[in-house]
Image 1 (tube, rainbow, N blue to C red):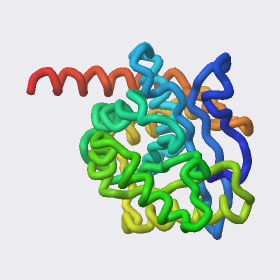
Image 2: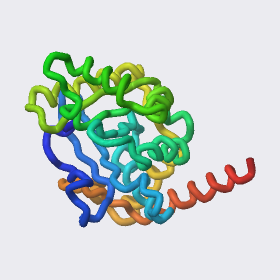
Image 3: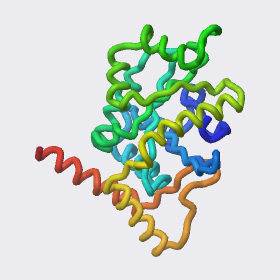
Image 4: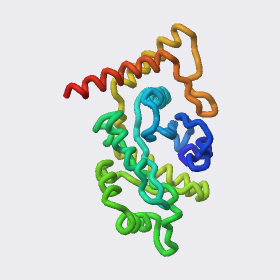
Amino acid sequence: MLLGEQLFVAKSAAKSITEHCQAGQRAFSERDLIVVDTPGLFDTVRDELWIQREITACIQAVMSGVHAFLLCIRCDTRYTQEEKDAIQWIKYMFGEQALAFCIVVFTHEDAIHQIDKSADECLADFLQEGSTNDLHALLTSCGNRYCAVSNTQDQQTQSSYTERIIEIIDGLDGKMYTNDLFELVKRAIRRSKESHGEFRLVEPNGQINVPPDAEKAAREYFRKSRGRSSRR
């Protein structure tokens, strides 16, 4: 939706595909939007090294920093454990300060649509009548930044969804999330290019090419981070 085309395959429709982070880019209202899809990152059965590599891929696609983490939650199903774990995962991997950049995006907005009410009124009713304490706690931890979208709407409506998300991001006053890992990955990629020549960071199909130097830097970062946490 944010990219104006179906670049990323929905998880529910792609059980057999290899789930890796992908990146896409689009010009919208005189802005360059970079969107990174992160399927499987919140899966608790994933190997730690696999997760670290995927995080490195995400950072590689947005090395200058992140304007927002979008937490997508379906309106048409119960609030799942994976969705509940997502916010804890972000805190674990990026720290409490990352919550200041989180936006909850309710998908399948058409499932709560009521003919005689506006989209905002329908969402308000859903949050008041159909949501749980856990969901309210999530919204609170994200500073009550949220909106609802649907991929089944026409192009004009989907553009309005994108405008709404950008409006929420603008409310963060141009701040971007970054940490030491972003700088380490940036340096590692610079070293890779100096040693092996230029290479494409992101393929046209969204695949992110992570060089060994970047993977190594990320593994060392996480090893030291875990060591600091265990000593507290």
